[in-house]
Length: 615
Image 1 (cartoon, rainbow, N blue to C red):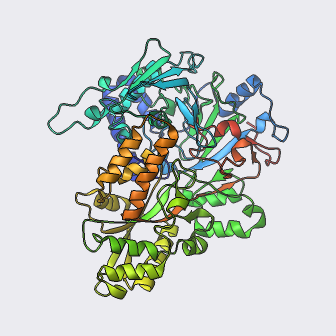
Image 2: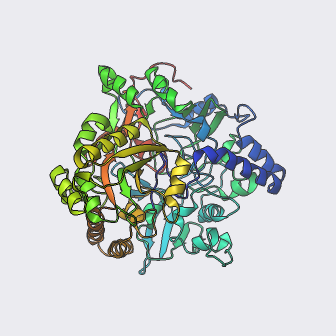
């Protein structure tokens, strides 16, 4: 269970972003019919087509002024005054049409989102799970019952306390087939009865959402999860546990956070203004009393096409961006001042790789797959194409991810063209004679993917005498072909990144039930044993490393590079979030500016900020 999109999600179950507008319209029609007048009003306002969505009594400026009057925190010596503590980030307006994770994962703003409630846990800068809305948690002896003790002081901005009922209502809403949440796959096979609600077995009657294993405990501040199997990874999964307000959900409908006047927040911010196709403004939630001490007083999300972000950055109109086009990156690198603003992050520990349909010739022969693995010059790809955007990969788990064994596995698929030629000859194709021409599929490729794909094709031809044609495919066509049974892609190039920080998440894609044709009983057994292992962490990680060795040695994939996404960060952003982590990495870490991370507590505006930031 891991994801392929830029901001959360997974194949094959994700809904392409191009379909999100239709999905939202469908939901709006359903809620208009089912929700009565209040539901209709919330839905139409949430669609963002009625002009500026500013609350009658809370403009962005007045919200900021109110927050400043209540602020009692001491800023660092180099920080700009509170009235200049405004963070500005971009987001694509075509994929920004709602606020809440449990409404739709693919539809929230980029880089700064999910600030209206607190998840049970969050990630610190070293990718460790730390308490958020939960003060503590514990698993039962069999690992199937997980009890979370909630922070008793948390409140919603409407004055209601945050209770376990909010999570119960949110999870039941997410599991409801009528909601058609785009992330239901995430808890399948994990939370008790979740699959029986969202995807019942053939011929079985679907259970009601109230039957899922999420319930209130002995008191309103105790939340209990029940799982299908022992799940020591559940706390890590619950990074994605941002609750909706049960009261607001029932009173205003699910899109209540799309309107400032109905926004209800237990996080550090609330919605101040939404100008469709222009910008979204978050202002301080004066009622917030969670664990994060947040210096930023206001967040502005500029809605602009991604191909304009670099220009906005150059003009000091945004403070941060990712997805820098190769041409723009070269411009940044050639400018001495801007070059200092380039950071390489670990992102979501994504790995790009070649894969094969191992059930079909010629890739049913291990020697062929091994030959391919030995003739891809990852160092050359890194030096000539990737630069700061990637590091050579010879195994699956990226450096810094739990159980990563990069050094221990590096020799298995090492660059050794002579060995590659020997293996291909042993498979019956000396110097590539008789080897069929191959078509290498790329999924919705960016320029960097096209460059890497072309380099791989050239290496295979030069070293092994194999002709390869690169084929650029649409996202939908590609994923439909990949997940068809049997798969329709013989030879492809794709990437995969984590959803939560546990090896089970990343290695799970290679299980027999995953998206590739490769199947290994030994691998499945090792992964499943490790996933449910309740003993010492070191032993659990060692089991995952044994599983990864099986994967790398059997070569269902040739691992090409671990992505280290480039970020551009303005020099007036300061704080602990931009100090090196335990691995020495300096960047704004995944999942960026959100309550799922400690980043909001570790980022502020310094005195170097240009003027005009006052609220």
